[in-house]
Length: 128
Image 1 (cartoon, rainbow, N blue to C red):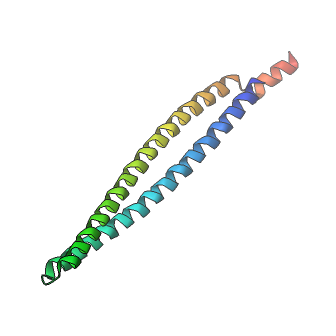
Image 2 (cartoon, rainbow, N blue to C red):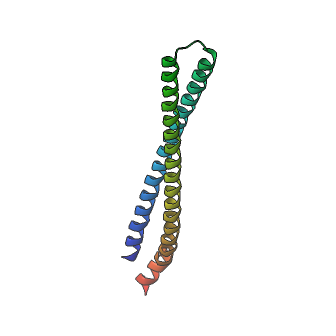
């Protein structure tokens, strides 16, 4: 009976480990998407800054509106960067969890090998 319990525990560990690996892959894809958005936003901000520098004859209203827009984009960039940092820390936590599950799975496998009956053991019991 102990062997069946250990097999069940091992299966649960493998299932949980696989779920965590899928979560890690999902979060890595999410980071890539956020990085692309951030890169686009930075390029856009640089282009607009370049345009602002080239247009000296603007009135104060237009100049103020462009500055406000630049500040909003800077805030969005900071928000995206904080999202990247948050997701990276979540990935790190998931990787730690995965490592702990792997260690537990190794211990279960070791205990399973100790209680697992070989063909010779079964023959001895039957003949004994």
